[in-house]
Amino acid sequence: MRLTIDQLNAADQATFTRLLDGVYEHSPWIAQQTWSRRPFATLAQLKHALAHTVRSAPLEEQIQLIRAHPELAGKAAIAGELTAESTHEQSRAGLTHCTPHEFERLQQLNSQYKDRFGWPFILAVRGPRGLGLSRQDIIETFAHRLRNHPDFERAECLRNIHRIAEIRLNDKFGQEPVEGQRVWDWAAELAQHTDVPPIEGEPFNLTVTYLTPAHQACARQLQNWMHECGFDEVRLDAVGNVVGVYHGLTADAPRLLTGSHYDTVRNGGRYDGRLGIFVPMACVRALHNRQQRLPFGIEVVGFAEEEGQRYSATFLGSSALVGDFNPDWLAQTDAQQISMKTAMQQAGLPAHLDAIAQEKRDPAHYLGFVEVHIEQGPILDSMDMPVGVVTSINGSSRYAIELEGMASHAGTTPMAQRHDAAAAAAELILYVEKRARQDEQSPHGPSVATVGMLQVPNGSINVIPGRCHLSLDLRAPIDTQRDALTRDVLSELEAICHRRGIQYQARHLLTAAAAPCSPRWQQRWADAVQRCGLPVQALPSGAGHDAMKLHQILPQGMLFVRGGNAGISHNPLETITADDAQLCVEAFQNLLDDLAHHP
Ligand code: HGY
Ligand code: MN
Ligand code: MN
Image (cartoon, rainbow, N blue to C red; front, side, top):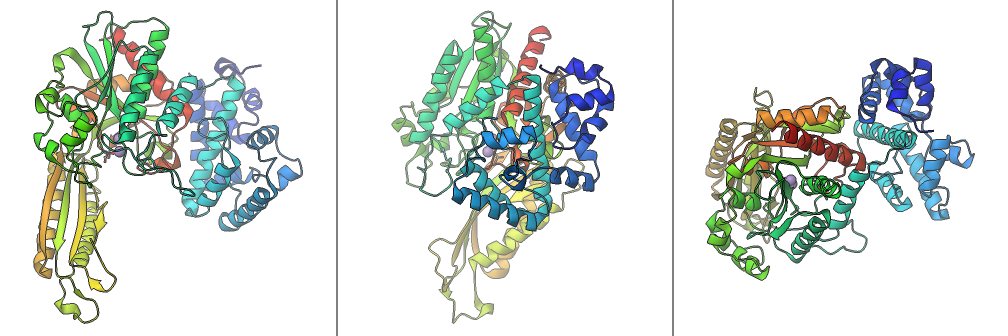
């Protein structure tokens, strides 16, 4: 008999607790304490309220909750003492059919883990999609998590307990996050295309940079899916953006512009950017299947290049849409000395400026720009909040720094006579970190600064580094703070090089203005999230997004979704759940509905 939210809202505390029996393993106190927060508008709100009860509980109770769970393929399983839910989950994940080697490995991991943390390893074995992890996935995750810091690992166990509870609640309610699973599956399928073929025994490396064969395969795949979803127009534009248009009541009706990028960083995650293409695609698919037209059109753009990996041309795709494509980019060459112009020609693109200039959008034809994106940080995940509304996007500046000292013999050159380029770089790196932290209490929000690339070209173990290359990525919530940070770092670079007798070149790569999100579109996202029954969590974006380019010509608003693994991103561990993807689709549908009724 399926449980309903009305049943729970009408239940007394004892009945409420009984109806939710088994959701949190051997821990009825969570339902008991959450009862007083009813009524719940949606299942999503109930899930968040239950998680909030755990988050507000004393540390000791949280640890007791973790300890209430059985080990994976552990003693309780062997003795047949698992709860019905755990039995179902562990057997569905194949943990009752381990090979002797797998079983042995799991016993070893259980004991190492227990010795290190003092509680059992908790993993939602039904996984982020809900279909179930393989034994290999489980064992690899188990071994990987053994290395975590205890505080991080305790939080990770609680995240997995909430994921287990979420799946158990879905089962009780007979609910399946179908649209979220569709988005999740699109991400999994598109991630099969990568510049770096899988290396035996190595984790899968997702790298899709501008106009490579994998990038072009992604563009074809996105166009095919857009056709299948029922878009009226699908095309590849002059810079490789994939553009899908679903008409409004008329083909020339004003449009909502949305989308995100489909390129990735090297060895990146499968949701960064792409999620923001798939979510509106799923919404268009649902409208098409209902043969429903809105008073406005929906234009979904898969931006071809946002990360600036192959060429230093960050936000290239969205720059074309705002008429800000830098002509110098065409002559830029990649690591193989292939110019962007040549790469475009090889990919069958026009590769000339007037075709690119045609891509500039007339803002008069658009209502605004919205982008759905993973948060790429720990805030939402640390609050058990599935989605959040972005207030502003950090401004950034990027530089490529080349230091030139003097290569000389590591054994004979006295320390006081060295011009060590790497030591100069090290001194700058520590300054960058210290200087960014000075802004931690800034009223506008903190700055962040990163040296993400550091290289001693042709270095040798017994040669003092004569040259050193490094990158600077400096960000702040407002432009004046970003500029002060940049100014200080560059003047410290000057001082360090003067002191050490080092020559340097600082090549400016990018300055992106901070982009405050439009209050109107923040409110639209907030209303959309509230209609999902969730509290509205506003937060700034430390990461840059295509929305900050569209900000130049249109009001923009962003919806963030929490990432698993404490929101890690630009990393293969980047992950989201199908249930959270479902909430993104539902929130987007709420926004479309609101826009249709209150333009
Ligand atoms: O670096 C960024 O902020 C974005 O992921 N390109
Ligand atoms: Mn990114
Ligand atoms: Mn991104």
